Every structure is written in structure tokens, then in C-alpha cells.
Amino acid sequence: KIDNPAYKGEWSPKQIANPNYEEGVQLAAYDTAMLGFELWIVNNGTIFDNILVTDDIEYAKAQGEKLWRPVAKAEKEVKEQWDKENKPADEDVGSGMDEED
Image 1 (cartoon, rainbow, N blue to C red):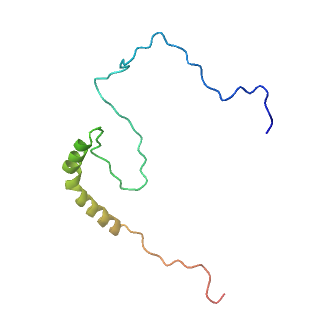
Image 2 (image 1 turned 90 degrees about the horizontal axis):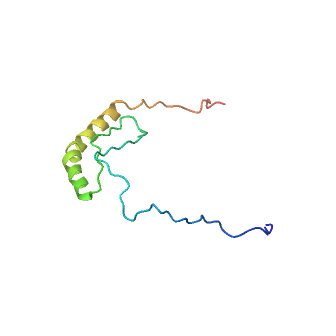
Image 3 (image 1 turned 180 degrees about the vertical axis):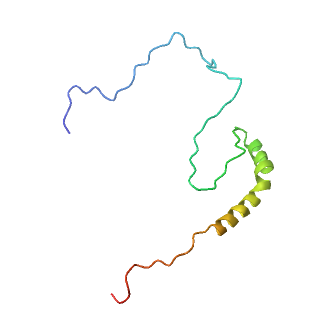
């Protein structure tokens, strides 16, 4: 390490008073709520529906029980059946070398 004679310490931004600042003022309010998101699906057959955005955990749990619980078991059974029917054939792939070699 080399000493820097011009070093003035850790940099911190200047705090400049804003004459237009108003304490507690809501900067934006919207009549409609919209949400956009990008969803990357890793596994084939993944389905997303009934997307809920809320800050109320109890409401979210109630909606989960109302909307998700009734179909979850059936969806799982259909997925397992599809996986079973579409499972790649097990091929016995050796090293490619004969035992005599």
C-alpha cells in the first residue's frame, strides 16, 4: 500500500437542503393497481394461474384454501400420470468397450 497525501477520508455525499420538500406528502396515488412480471419456467408442464397479490396474509391463506386446495391433489395425480406415460425409455448404455478389450 502506498500513502496518499491527498486522501481526505471516506467519501460521503453532501446533504443539501431541499426548499420544496414536504414531510409526509404522498408522492403518488393510483386508482388502478397493475403488476407486471417476467416468469421463467424451468420445468415443462409448470402452470401458473390464480395469481394473487396482497399484503394480507390471512386473506391469502383463505384464497389458497378456496382456489388452490380443491385442485391441488387432482393436478398432482394428472402430472404423475403424465410423467409415468412420458418417461424416457431406460436404455442400457455401456462404456462402449467390449469386455474382451
